[in-house]
Amino acid sequence: MTSTTDTSIKADFDRTDPEAIFDYSENIIGKSLHSIVGKAAMERLRKGKGGLGQMVEELFFGYGVNSDRSADFSEASLELKCTPLLRSGKDGSFRIKERLVCTMIDYFELVATDFKDSHLLRKCGLMLLLFYLHKKDVPLYDYEFLFRVLWQLPEKDLMIIESDYETIRTKVKEGNAHLLSEGDTLYLGACRKGQKGDNPQDQPYSAVKAKKRAFSLKPSYMRYVLSHVTGQKNRSYSNFSRRKNEKLQLVSEDELRKASFEQVITQRFSRFLGMDYIEICDSLEEDAYQSKSKHADIAGLIASDKASKRITSAEEFLKSGIILKTVRISGNGMPKESMSFKNIDYQEIYENDEWEDSELYELFTRRFLFVVFKETDREIEIRNRKTGQTTNENAYVLDKVFFWTMPPRDLDRAKDFWRHIKEQVVNDRISLDSFWNISDDKDFHIRQKGKKGNYKNCAVNPNGGMADKLCYWFNAKYVKSVIEAYSKG
Image 1 (cartoon, rainbow, N blue to C red):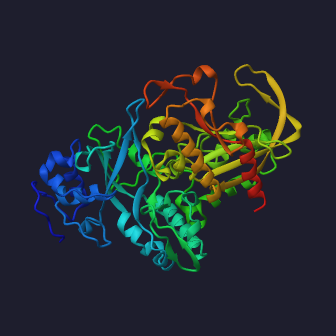
Image 2: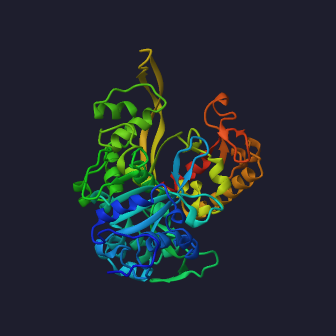
């Protein structure tokens, strides 16, 4: 048994039982370490991102912190993770601050180890997640713990995580550890780790050194986990020994045994290539209708095997953060419009000093599913569901379907984009004239989404008062370059 420490509280629970440990963790919710153990928290302050977790393990649970690679509660095969939340300035809701770092990646060990034998699986198959409220300039020992979750990685999640693991492993085997990107994978990321100025690491099969990285569960996956607990009165949730999934699921376990998630999805689109909207609707035995979202709707139906038009809430999309984008292009390959994303959270920009912890980095390193429709010379007739009238419009045929990750060179430009946004926000210059414009021809730009009355002075300005609601955009020319790069293979 791991030795206990001399704390001011009695850590009395069955150390071999995950549920007993989870039950005991109720005593920290709504409190800080300082409020529980008094001066001991101040005297044993540990610095660094993992410092709070070590303090909780030692002072609250009564475990001596050690450096071995087993799970924190080794006798219960349970890992402890303390993970920060931020509170939204607009509505007071909570949001995930960062990805959940699981364990460091040893490139040499990785290439020699199958997923089923990995340290990652042994350490994170079952986790006790303690969510706390992060506040700038507040000592670690005064952070308040808000929610607790006993999270057992579901079987289907494990299958996708194993595929992610193999994607990362294959890249390292090919001598490309230095080209790893969090956008390569769905649930499991290979995030950068370490301090600024750290020396790169050696990697097998290449003389090029690679930056330190760690396996992590992506912010989108953590948002999915958090969603289970935020509505609970007792601020706790457990899926331990329960394997229920009520969300829409795009693929089955049987399908994942035969092919990867992405292969299953893209294969579903293959028989519709070259068909226009009406032809696809006929093939799916669905009613065609006039709507701005009709191409996105039909893409959702194809991807979900007719289960739903709205697949952004599907379990796999929520956990992986995949972004579905339907693109209509003209005959010369130019998209009909630029591509919009989420509105800017100025408070997050203001408070966050690290690019790789930013919402924009998380957004741009996600996996994208591009569904491309190409304009033709022929017309189709579509009925408006509200008025019953029919209109004619140019037909667009399904041309390409592919998954995409922003390449490192583009991500470097996105970092410059973020730096410029941050500079403007910090200096209280939040206006269309202050940010990159589409005419600047820099791949990305900032502008509003929707009509003027819907965006003026309706976002919180961290400098005080209100600001215009603006959002991130890909330039149409950049989207064209993404599609052309895929076409060239």
